[in-house]
Each structure stands twice: as C-alpha cells, then as structure tokens.
Amino acid sequence: MKLLINGKPVESHGDCRTVADLISLPEWSGRLMIIELNGEIISKENYEHILLAEGDRLELVHFVGGG
Amino acid sequence: MHDPLLIGGTALTSRLFIGTGKYSRNTLIPEVVARSGSEVITVALRRVDPDGGEENIISHIPGHMTLLPNTSGARTAEEAVRIARLARAAGLGNWVKIEVINDQKYLLPDNLETIRATEILAAEGFVVLPYMSPDLSAALRLKAAGAAAVMPLGAPIGTNRGLRTKELVRIIIEEVDLPIIVDAGIGRPSEAAEAMEMGAAAVLLNTAIATARDPLVMAEAFRDAVAAGRKAYMAGLGPVEEVAAASSPLTGFLG
Image 1 (spheres, rainbow over the protein chains, first blue to last red):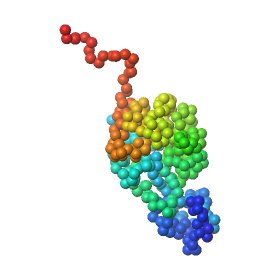
Image 2: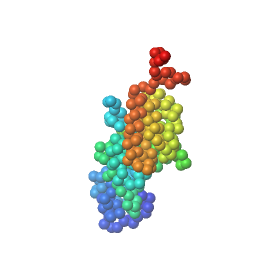
Image 3: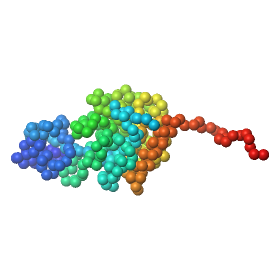
Image 4: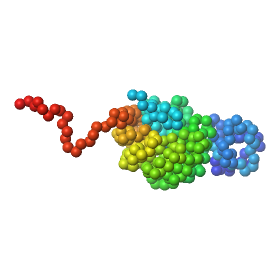
C-alpha cells in the first residue's frame, strides 16, 4: 500500500493495517508524535482503530527546540 | 514584592520567558530553566525525520513549565492555525505563540496574517500570544481579536541587537491594555532591564542565553536584570532634569 508520510512516498507492508501498526515500526516508535491523517488530527485513542488506505497522507510531527 | 503576571488565567512569578533553540546540547535546558527562574518556555513543531536521531525536546523541559509552542514555519494564518491545533493535540496545554513570517531576510512577522490567526485561535479557546512588528493599530486589533498578550519585537530574531524599536514599543505599552512582552532581539541583560523599566510585562528571549559562552550564568544575569527592571518600573523612576540638581544640602558649607 502506498502512503505519503511527511511528504515522502512510502510503500507499507501488508501487516501494517492501522495507524498504531505504522507507528510501531522501528523508524517511528518511541517518539512523542502528533499525527494528522489526510489533513485531520487523530487522537491517540483512535490509533488502533483507524485503518490505513491506499494513498493516505500522513503528517507525523513532534516538538523540537525553538524560540 | 507580590507582583504576579496574569496571562490566560495563569499567575506567573517570573517575567522572563525563554526558548529551547540553538543550545549546544539540550541537556543544558533544565539547568537554564532553573537558573533563569523562568516559568514559560517556547518550542517549535516539525516533521519527524525517521532517519534523524532527534531527541524529544519535551523530555528536557521540567514539568512545572508552561509550554509555549510557536507556529514558526507558518506563512499564512491558516498554516499557523494548523500548527497550533497540532501542538494542542499533544495534550501539553493550550498556549500558542503565533509567528507568521514571509520575510526570509529579517524574519519580520506579517501582522495582518497574525491578526487573522489570533482571531481564529482565540475563538477556539487558545491562550494566544502573537509575535508582531511593533505597530499600535495592529496591537489594538490583536487585543480585539482576543490575544492574551502582545509580543512586539525589539530587533530581528536572533540578532542580539537590542531594543531597537523602543519608541514604538513604549507607545504600545502606554496605549494597549494587555501585557506587552518584548520578544526577539534582546541581546544583553541591560536591554531586558530597559524593556522592563519602561513597563513591558515580560521579555522573551532565546538566542541571548543559548549563544552565550556560558548559558547558565547568562540565564542568571537575565533573571536578575528582568527582576531589577520590573522593580524599577514598580518603584517609579525619578524625574530626568536638564541641569544639575544637588543631592547634598546647599547650605551649611564649611567656612
């Protein structure tokens, strides 16, 4: 399944069905992130329930140092 | 002296707001917080880079701090609103520093877009602190839009050039009935004290501490300068005279 994550095309594997599955992958796990799916912020309680679909656009953001 | 600063229903003891950018290492941040006495700290929001090993900045910020996420990177009101909503979704409070910038050389804020973003976010219950170019009519519009404070710049971001906009900021302090926080440009503790002496409610600075040779001692210097400037304002500065006015009695001289 093709996803667009932070502006980059990503091919996800078959067992990556939900948002929770996606962010448990090594490259995303262990981070305090806020997630936007197709322009809508999704709450943590829904990560397990939201099924990813072909062409979904995800933004995974977090806090960094700034003034 | 009991002199709290009230912003968005929160009573703050410290009038020094600090940032988290540009530190040589983020492990300095807890000690900078402690030495500065600050209670409000800014952060930015960015895409996670799966290949980058960036640490979680939040883990370096003591839990008692009020988090002030900025909307840096926004070029329009809509982008600022989107960033603010994402920041609030982190569940770490509802304060936001609006920062809408289209000028890449001087990083001067776009007041019109800033006013639009303030109106939208204040209506959504955010505690909105807009960073702005010092302009009285824009400051009044920000107040009408629901800003909790107004944050005019002293000089362009990160320049350490000081309170170059002094006269305009002074007018805003005089005419706008909101806390006025001088944000950006302050490079020296004496400049922070100067802003506070003229009635600024607080100062927000990042670069001046983060790029000092010893950020921890500089954090203390700014803490003391802001406190001294505030006390001077509260005490009421003595009058300025054109010619000498003797401090010692002019009678009873020795013969």
